[in-house]
Length: 266
Image (cartoon, rainbow, N blue to C red; front, side, top):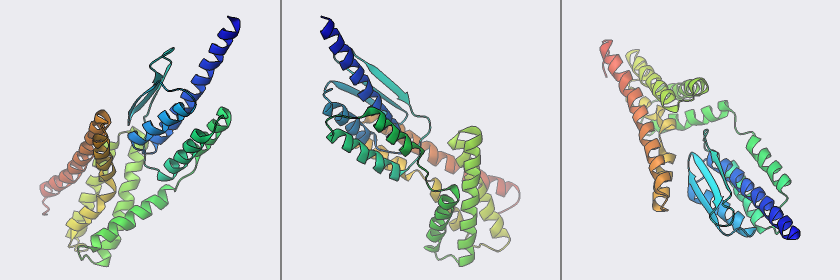
């Protein structure tokens, strides 16, 4: 009986380690914008590859729960507060998880250390991302046959609006507020340049300026989740996309309304 007790204790300890490892992987994947369907597949496959077949998973963009619906019913949960899109980290996490699945024995400490390195891996600086977003938005305005001066104004306005968004997020952690104020700045700036005669196509500057804030990824992921049967996750992402679009509308609409009240014209 003593041997059996020791075996059960060792089995439970091993299960906890694998479940915690899967939870950490799932957390990092969700934080970096992975699909919930892919996160569930990787976490489930990792646990099953180590002999834990009765695993239950509950995953949404903001929480991941992993547990056992048989035996001792051990369960772990982690909430996801900060999310972004980082395909490089998602790729590294996918590769690492598939490697762990193929291994017969997993060195938990080594795997956790690798995951921590991936978590802390430096990405592109804000300056590089802002310049890239500015160039993309400004180039889009050229499709409407705007001039190169308007191209330059769009580029500058986008960089400043992204900086405003970054500072508001750091201060309030509210993305909706950041989007509203940033897009409000875009709208007012475009109209001001129009009055000065520097940007006759101010509407196209607004259209190009809001591109970095559009919820394209959220809409795509919501459709993907709904098609995959992840109704809760799909509805959550749909709501996120709707609120983002609403924030853009409030920001631009508020700027236009204020501009008219100040005696301007659109």
